[in-house]
Image (cartoon, rainbow, N blue to C red):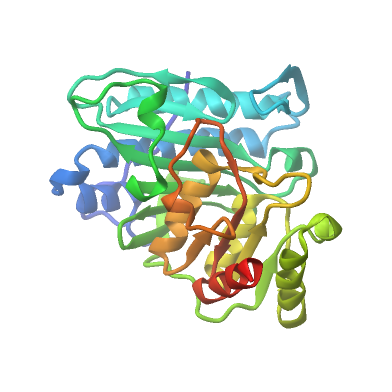
Length: 336
């Protein structure tokens, strides 16, 4: 159980950093919108969980959360201790929000059903700790969330979650790095908030985000180049000739840099993984939604990410996202 949460900002009262707090933002943006009623509670709950995970990440070695549990998750990977703790934390706060009907999670094989009353109208799919292989070496990691709205009469089960990314009403991600940053996207809006650790409040620091028109960076695993199909190799070579490589190996960190600075991220299909490696529902759809609301694009290399009709909850996909013009150029090269 979470022992602490966000120290709520008050309407009309400036935050310690002088900007609008996340709490003020969700109240002004969602509370008077019937189509988004209750979304503020979901976003605030994610922020509460992120503060708890931030604390664990900062003190991971001392808190005995580094290392492996000895278990494997549904993806067949070793579950890091902080993976499980983060998953438990976000499930806990989302259930307690009273607004979430069902939660799908990378670390949990079956979705968690919270309830189906008339207030529980949101469905959340999440990667609670993206980039967990970087935990032990102090590299930026993150959390990713896609949020869909369900009909009140709609059933609440695993099939409820199998919706295309285009039906998302919101998405969010958190980066735990030199600072802890939360980005929240709704239709036509992408806003960034930074955690003020002294007050425990997220403060707006990056209003009205959009991907820069200039694209100085590309992010991909160059070590996998020889395993790519020839057309994808041509696309990567073209990027290599024109852009600078920046690759952390943590999806959320790479995407966040490209959102702020301009760039394109690629984890394309290859000869050994023709269906891709990243998770459609937990990673590609939420970040694809953020990218599109920020003026960018997201594709598999052949089709728009948000148009995919999912077949199953833990489905994988290739992912290319970022600067719209460059994504479209890459897709054209791969298809050619």
